[in-house]
Image 1 (tube, one colour):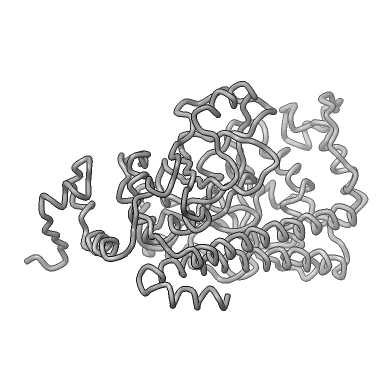
Image 2: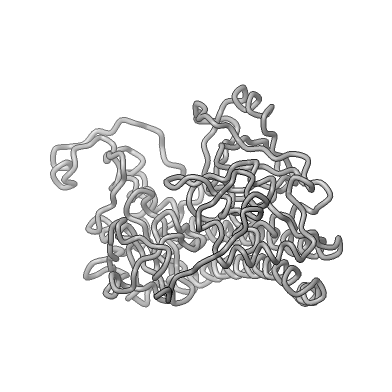
Length: 468
């Protein structure tokens, strides 16, 4: 009768010991979490508050944003052992920053932790920076004492760290990790030698990402120089004189569509050999995915990639899954498929490196190169360049939520270089992604080594790190 049910019998004294706020919901005492408690009790763990001198978070109110000022970072800038300001941020005034700085003053060597919202409670270390910043309430800050911050960040990102923090979550619609709960996170106290090895790997991984960024930037510069766009900046002029026939041929009346910078763009493109992106004579075939609706979202099944889950640099493992039955007919991204966003943040392109068993939302198009005149890596770089971003901006502008129509995407002008020049640029792109892949491998290895040290002992883990 009880087949398939999970039952845990817990002493009242254990409830009081494990939960200062007297959590008695069944999810808090699953068999997996009880086993985790036993593992922690059998090893050398200490509360986070005992290895830190400060645990704080960012402002609990939204300050006024300005066009230029001090960066104001949020949870999207904190990834698994990666401090990522390139994910985007707002700015606040120097005065607002100084006021916030009295509460939370993140600095080099501090550990940042995502504390609000669904999904993992990822952590990273603040690297050496040439700027100050403030943080929102969605980010917690830990100033370590007596423990290496890179080791601490890596531990938080392990399965053992994450299971504890996700267990502490409060709330349903917008789960939140309270600071007092973060302070009682049980941290494995490893030897100084092992901590140093973990820190060395994480720092090396960060250096590889910096080198990858340089390679990618060089590829972008090569592309723009070859096409004659290296020294071009779009004009800021806001006045353009058009004839009635221009409005008729464009099928648009909004002033934003006819800004002078777009005239400049297409005048430069007319000097290049170009080809339409899609359509009968285009470079790619375009397929659309599905939109199952939020009712189909689950924590099991096929990973469901939305626009927020990918950038031109890769795909973040999505938190949402959907049933295989719902998505049986939806296309899976294959090697060299280019994913292109058409809704919201339009014009983001990423070339898939290997076949993926994921489903993408309807806001993401699947582009498959069908013309030998273009290389996938080259095309992806062009799609992410200002040459195409401006075309996307022109087509999708004029609305609160941007939507780039597939018919407009098919007409996008793609400049083509000779194949030998494309290959030189593509080699730079591939080198950049190879460095990023190696960085990810090192971070995964460091995290795995910490888990092995906890479960099997440091001897096995140190041997793993000695051979990375």
